Image 1: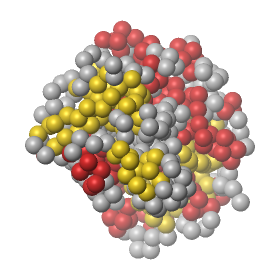
Image 2: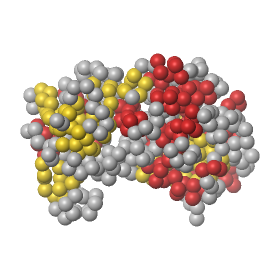
Image 3: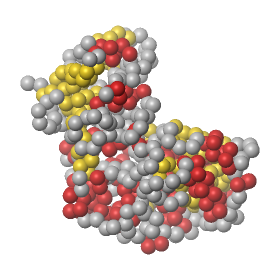
Image 4: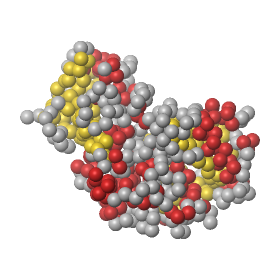
Length: 131
Length: 385
């Protein structure tokens, strides 16, 4: 399933490398301390170019979710669920991911990060209900 | 200096709407442009500007300009992007005419969106947008998936329910039944809607636009020149573009407030009009939730009142504000917003036949309200009758 291999670019290569190690990183601006994702060179809040990776606690809530009944990409079992998670680290960080929980992931549900190992060398973000 | 009433749509051209045009996007573009010039009573040699947009799915503007035989292109716009930009193609072309950059600009959108390049990469590679790397690995890439995320937030938040979405679909099909060009004209009931299969929960098949092969073209020129041409000019009263936040811009905590809500006051300010002055609205409707969303964001119904407005039949022809009188993307066909501009021109010329809104003098035409791409745009067109 080569289409599932992330097409990392020069801004995102380190972030994806961390996901492969089962780590979720965020950028923290050295000037204003704002967090940001996805990885970018400049802070949109203050214009600062200096930043440091900071691990996320991997907690959040379900901002939205969908269940796809049609095959828009090959080889995925149908139907499949995709979630959009609002990170607890900062409320304007919205990340797409897979769903490893049982049942539906209702909006507002507290979730925690797990990682889905898709194939050797490929891990992706996935989420499950937080206890 | 403002744009108000200085530029006119002087001609409209359309190809057939189909599932398989059998021809290239270049051929579609040329057919629609030639038809629009014929409608205006102008010739190829009058054209000195070209404007289009696309997502890597269509003949680019320089190729079309060369194929039109234009030797000295005074204005060229080759926007890269999707439905949020549809009105910018017309708006920027109008600005070029108003500032003397060009005299006659053809605007078009040509797509083989069913037979060649389906939106979002279905059946081919995903679009080359950097942010797609964060979605594609989850099999999350196609427009119905992206808009289903928005629909879920609106439905779970209580702003909408499935009867409202179904009524949008049913109402627009009733409009399409009066439109000989429309791809789908068989009337629908709410039960038909509720029985239609899921594409991406919470969106059903009948929440989704068609995938269409077609082109639409417009000819723009100064209001002064347009008065001497073949058809009654439809004046461009105002244009605006705005927004910019996306899911990936670290400024947004929810999906719903659209760029249209931010932009609408500027649009109406530029027009010197209020939402109550709009007689007919052609609202970008790739998916049903965008109709109630925009009714509220443009102030076309009371705040929080879109569901009631739609359920009461106010968006039907004969209602307080007829919406998507041609059937929209849901039932006429999907020409990425430009068929909505063409329909507004028909309405304001009094050319809309069985679907004519009586006394229509002012129309609002919106682009995709900025979800996914961030940016939106819209036009207010004023009638000449």
